[in-house]
Image 1 (cartoon, rainbow over the protein chains, first blue to last red):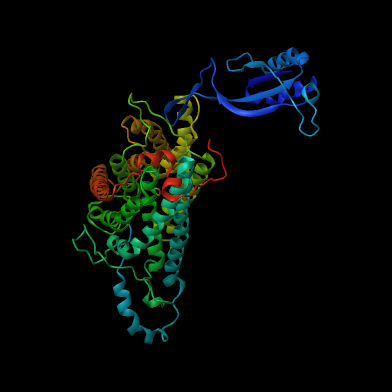
Image 2 (cartoon, one colour; image 1 turned 90 degrees about the vertical axis):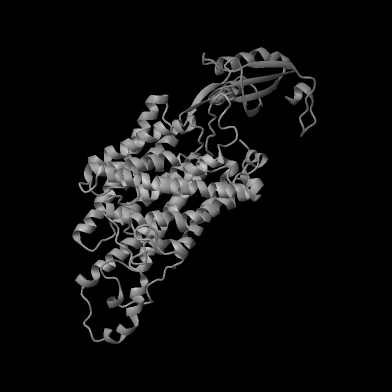
Length: 112
Length: 443
């Protein structure tokens, strides 16, 4: 099992959700976050004074999938969330050692 | 147009009783006799309601432009200042501002501690001031103006001033300072004699509030973190721009009463027509100020700045307030538009001087107020530039120096600024123990 953590632009969330359910992903966790990457924020002007927005709003997705699906899911997220402009986000994949569905007690791949 | 000199109540009260016996025998007065009194009284009541509502406008504008951690405090200051102003204007202010024959120092200072007395219940026509309006309506109409002056101060000093020193300043401003300087012009004092012209108060009301705010902002200092050591300005965006916009529209509405009511008469075709003329000009100036700020911020900063557009509308209103009657609609347009330019250019200028004005009260009410007072000369042939400048300077010196003295006394006596921890945590929890939005997460 793998855990995929992806940061995407907020307006891409619906597209990504649709594409992922389309390839059989059955659940995800979504958080509104702020952060910075190579974009390093940007500047805005309020009442004539320029100020830096160091942390840009993003959406964080956490998706647990069977190891066999990882490449497909990562590719789908990347293709759907990509605008080609700076700030499209990043995708991280890590090992997941255990999983359980609370209602039934099923574990690991059965729980996903 | 100059204000009528308020006639002391003593005269009315003295003649009231002896005449009661004869009232029955006289024929009922016709409309020609009592109509103007009734219409003007009605004008004062309705215009007074509108100007009263400006207190709500100021509250919403300020509530929207301060950060969410200071909203409860800002609302407390707003209802507190209005209410103290109302009481002080009865206790001292009204008769100090409209001394009639009761000057202590002719043309300069009226009587202290002369409380306002209303017309008797069910006053007979013979005993009423038929050439003007009822005392109750006049008092109420003048009272809501002084409250506007105090509101200007609260916005500029938001987010760091302690509640009680602020309210004490309001008491001095509305009970003593504003009425004394107001009497020079509207009470028939020396500036009015000199030919100074300020129809509804660009100077008498708005720049007085602006000068007091400027003095306060200098003594108080900027909010923590607003200006970096390298001269960098850190914006502190307001908590709710929808409320700020609502507040601006409420002020815009209230301004029809502010300027229209200042015609001070509605008993003739000419007067009632003039009131409508003032409404149209007032609206035009506000629209021009807003559009100018909208376009100017788009050009200067590539994106329009809503808070500047709101300030621009208000600056247009302040600009037309000294002479809302004489200009054509086109005149109101360009006078208001220049008000909008003034705001967009002077808000960053104040920041350069490290004078922290949270809501833009000083550019809107002081700078645009000065402009509006000068602009009188373009359409009012009776006004001269020299006299207008003399009035502007007289009000500036008296109010700015007076306010500085009061602020310094308050600072020495009790401190006017909250401590660092309270300012960073927000005045709502530290000074009041009450949040405006307790169910919202911290953004």
